[in-house]
Length: 440
Ligand code: PLP
Image 1 (spheres, rainbow, N blue to C red):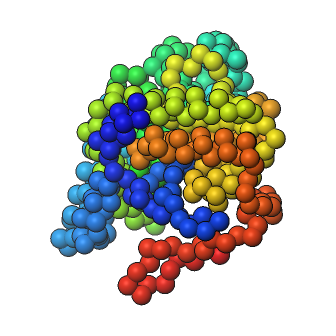
Image 2 (spheres, rainbow, N blue to C red):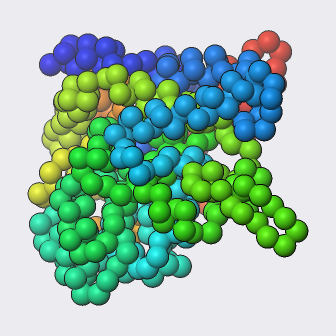
Image 3 (cartoon, protein in one colour):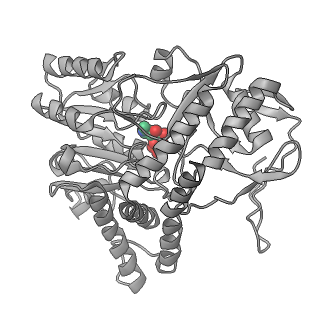
């Protein structure tokens, strides 16, 4: 099976850093095994290529008659088309470029004309953004079915303008039935927003087919780490609201006593646009559109199942789930290890095995509290993950449980580190006499 998985993987795409060598605390180096795609994913080769091509033409967007400005403006506006195609957005849905998902959700929160209903399993970005705007929290039940019943009860109890749900949990990767939730929201007179920060990198979403009104995601989780995100959605609320930021680019006409604001998307994009970020994000959307989404999902299922099966065979490993009837799970595996503090395990994997995974509460404190935990481990996979990486992670956890760590670790200010720390924290990529990136 390994050969099939790896073959499929390399056929999909190449990502930056897939041959990165990292130092080990005991000496020597190894190839980095990245299991932190859910936090920030490496750049796709198509993304770095597009950015390299655009860099010589980099100039002001919407603000210059020079040739380079015209090219930059074209690229920026064309990027909206790539996002529209990637999400199969409807005609009345516009693409607003933002910094990231958090930015997108805060932007929309200021436009919603009424209450927003949210679940208690959300990432803080899709929870706190609604606080100032009539957030009504529904506690997720033990099953998806029961949770949907609770959502219907809340939406029917008094009018809400918006149902804001995650596409895939950033802790467990569990996916909600979005088309069904969109229908329910609409039947109750509300619209639906999907926080697709974790879903968009793993599954194709059609806004038209699902009826999703608003959707947000981050470029840096979609293999385009150049500082852009998007909010895509129906234009009327965006046009009726105050501009997100006041400034140049968001206006049609400014007088001393009166301002005529532009309509969306420009209305919410004041300031000089991030053309490299938008172009990078567009390149990632184009590249993902070109990949057969069924094969991608199958590839990820194979890897994630391999990881879950391998981990669950190790004594003391507890895999985390919110529900046992979720219709799909993306490539995220969260777990705890009896007798070990998550931060210590993550430090051990990094220091002794060159494996990067995330530990902590994942900006989802209410969900971790529901699960009765004050921390866990999260391994997330993506386009650069191979079955060999998965096996390395499983073997490293099995070794820890069977033999313990071979180095000492200490916690200072909540951060676990090997003691002594022998690894140089210097980027090896600084060449041509440039100052290296020294991290400590
Ligand atoms: N929503 C989910 C589900 C996430 O996983 C994250 C980040 O991890 C966010 C929102 C926030 O994304 P960003 O930090 O890019 O704004």
